[in-house]
Length: 287
Image (cartoon, rainbow, N blue to C red):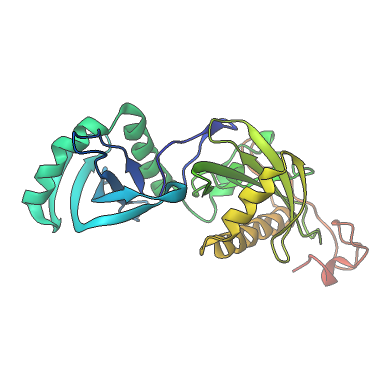
C-alpha cells in the first residue's frame, strides 16, 4: 500500500495506482487505525462518466508502508471527479456503512489527495497502446535512452516502499530500432524528491550491474524486484518499448506533423539495416 506521498520530479507527479493510506488523528487510547482507499474506474475511454468508486477499509500500518487489514468490512463511496463530492454506494458494506465513513473521509481528503484522485481518473481514461503517437516528439531524443513515461504518460509509475520510505523508479529505455542492447537505466528518486542514484540494469535477468551515486539505489532496485508483480511489469514495458522502436522504423507516406513521431527510416530489403547491426534489412528489422 502507498502512503499517498507523491514525489514531484521530472515535471511529473508519480503514482503507482496502489491503495492510498490516510493517517487518522490519534485518540486518547493511542494510535487510531488508518484508512486505506482503493480506486476503481470505468475502463472505457469513450464512456462519458465523470466519477470513480473509492473502496474504503481500515488498516493498521506495518513495516515498509504496508498495511494489515484489521476490519474486514469495506465500504464503497462514489467520488465525483469535477466537484470532489462523495456519495454512498450500495455495494460492499451498504449505504449505511458508506455514510458513516463519508464524514471521516471529507476531513482526511486534502486538496493534494483530491488532485491525485483526479489525475488517476485522467490516467485511466487516457491510456491506450498507441498513446506514444500522441506525444510531442520534438522533445524526445531517440538517440539517447528515453524515460518510459515520456511515451506512455498515463501508465502507472514504478514505486516501492523500502525501509519505511516510498521511492519512485524512472526507467530509461533504448529506442533505436533493431538495437540488440539489453540495457535499462533506472533513476531512483528519493521520497522528498531528487535522485538517489542511477542503476544500470540488464534486461536478461533484471540484475543491477553498477550504480552511479548512492549505493543504496541498488538496494531500492532489489527491493522492487522482490515485489510479486515486478517482473511482469518490466517485461510488459520492454515489449511496449520494442514495439515503439519497430513502428519508428516503418516508412510513412506523408510528412509527420510537428507533434507526431520523428521521420521514419527507409531501407530496401537487401540494403544494410539502418540499426547498424551489419545484417541485411530483410534479415534484421525488416518486415
